[in-house]
Structure formats: structure tokens, C-alpha cells
Amino acid sequence: MLSLTKTVGFREASQMKTLETLIPDIYEVLDGLNSDKGIDISEELMEDFLYNMKDALEGWSTPHLQSKTIRMSNVGRPLRRVWYDMKDTDSGSSEKDMHPSNFIKFLYGHLLEQIAILLIKLSGHKVTAMQKEVEVDGIKGHMDCKIDGEVVDIKTASNFSFKKFSEGTLVDDDPFGYMAQLAGYEEAEGTEDGGFFAINKESGEICLFRPGNLSKPNIRTKINNIKESLEVDEPPAICYPPVPEGKKGNLRLATGCVYCPHKAKCWKDSNNGNGLRAFKYSNGVKYFTRVIATPKVMEIPL
Image (cartoon, rainbow, N blue to C red; front, side):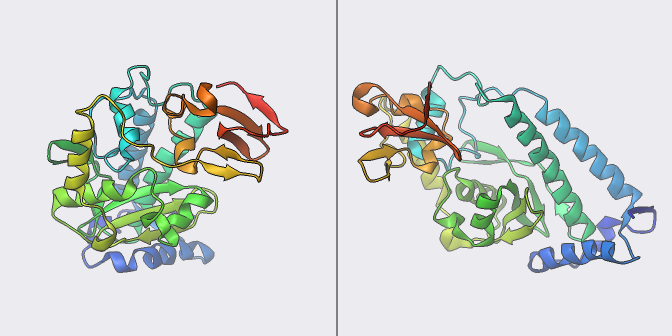
């Protein structure tokens, strides 16, 4: 059972920790629940956690209009996606036309991030600079935090996405631009050895992925490329080529395009000028850029 105590101060316990031991330190604390030891939570830490949960709830419940300003959170996205983000006047909200169930996912994503912060502090590691605003070449952003002096971005992930962090494949498969986002925060802070703290929303597993300097993009080059692309009226080249579906010549969107809000406009010339076609499979919707043989599942309107 969790207990409150005035004797355990999380600030005092975090003086000698380093990122190298973060994950085992958290598991060691949690292992106390397998015995009669339990977990001691100071009143200070409890109040801190409740405040952060309230802040997360307020942030989730506020509508997020699509900004036409480049932010650190989107500099790592493909150039064509950023071009449409900035130039597409039809999209007034980044959450436009979403099914209400998506907002439930957003909610527990916000709350899980605060649970991650709680676990990190409980394990005696020092958390600072939470939601600090930083800037590189005129591009601003808010970093999640620093842990033991290094920039750490906290991510909640599905089983599929969690493997990118636990196995390090994010370096080669990063459609949301997380690596550039981290590089930007580190450039602004003058640090270079941070990473991602990921929590698996389905299994509860956690991991720390520190990609190292060689794997991170040059953030200033990224920013310059974006600014140059926005000076012209035509969008950059497509982000990802379509991929074969089956053996009859059909082509569908690559995974990196599926969740893009601009996919219909971006691929308006597909299927001989008729635009994307969407078909509902048992494992989700697939979007086709070329249909030679009509899939034997329900077609849905876009």
C-alpha cells in the first residue's frame, strides 16, 4: 500500500543519480510493492504530482487550433507535411474530424506522462526545466524536462511504437520527427547526451533510449530547409512513396502518410485524378493511390 511520509524528500534523494541507472532504479522502487516494504511518498512529492495532473487535465481540455507558426515539435516532420501544415488554409484545427474516442487516448497520454515523471522522481532522479520554452534560429518549443541535467522527451507509446524506443529503430523510422525535436531542445540547452523515456501504454514497460550525437539530425539545417521550402508556392516532393498491396498492382499509402491530416489533398491526383480511395479492413482502414483490383471489403468515403 502506498504511504505518505514527511521524512522522504525527493529533492534530497536525487543528488547523486545519473541517467545510466534510471530504469533499474524505477523498477527497484516498484519492486517494493512485491513485499511489505511498499513505497514511501513524501507529502511534497504527492502535492507536486497532483498539481501536475491538474495542469495536464487543463491542457487536455483546451482546444488546440492548428498554428501556422513553425514549432520545434514539427521541424522533424517531412518537408511536404510541414509545407501543408503552414500553407493549408482549410485546416483550422489539428484535431479536426477526429472520432471522440481519440480524445480519450489523448487524455490518458497526458496523464501517463505525469505518472512517468512521478516514477522518475520516486526513484531519486532529479527532474528540472519542466515545460521550459527554448529557441533555435527563431523556432520555439517547450521541452518536457531535464533528468539529471540531460534533456529527456517523455513518450507514451503503443506496443508497435514502443519497440522503436526499446530496440533503437526510431533512428531509421521517425515519421513524427522525434529525433529532430530532441536535437532542437539539446541545441538550445547546450547538452548532447539526452534521449527518450518511453512508457508502453499497453504493457506498462518502460525504457530509456539515448540515440547519441551521430544519429541526430542537424537541427539548424532542418530549420533552414523548412524556411526555404515555404518561400515557394509548390509543395516539396512526396514524403513517402506508395507501397504495393497484394499481387494485382494495387498501391496504398505508406504508414508515414496514413495519419497525416493532409493526405487527401496531397494525393488528390491519385487514381487517375479521382483521389485516394479508402477501404475498411479488419485491422483498420487502408488508403489506396492506385486500385487495379477492387478489394473485397467495404469502401468508405473520404
